Length: 126
Image 1 (cartoon, rainbow, N blue to C red):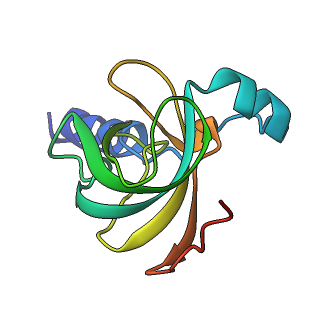
Image 2 (cartoon, helix red, strand yellow):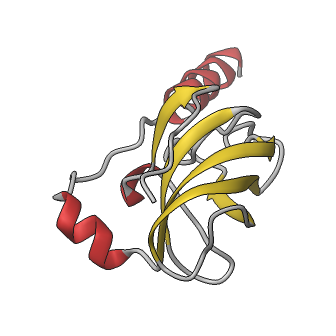
Image 3 (tube, rainbow, N blue to C red):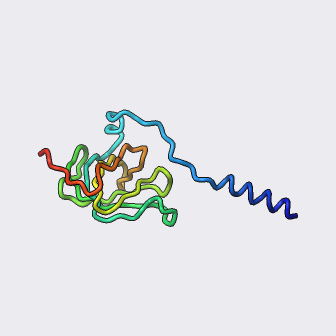
């Protein structure tokens, strides 16, 4: 009986290993076409989508610059991310370039979204 319990424990440990986010990187033009909204924004508040305790995470961004879509500079936009290894880990004060799609807007690592710089001020080109 102990032998079977030990085998079960080993199998459980092997099956529960963390899996890194895997995706094929796409060219910027393709990421832009796939997104409904692309903007640079500063995180005002956030809940971590990779915490494992909630089904999704989210962040409210102040839009600093719009590159695609109907979001406007100065607007506050909520973006949802997945609770998985492909989810994004947003933190207050961070500046991100967000490629988002859907309603509500969703972004994750495969979407092309990326952290610009912690606490960075992004000058407006407009």
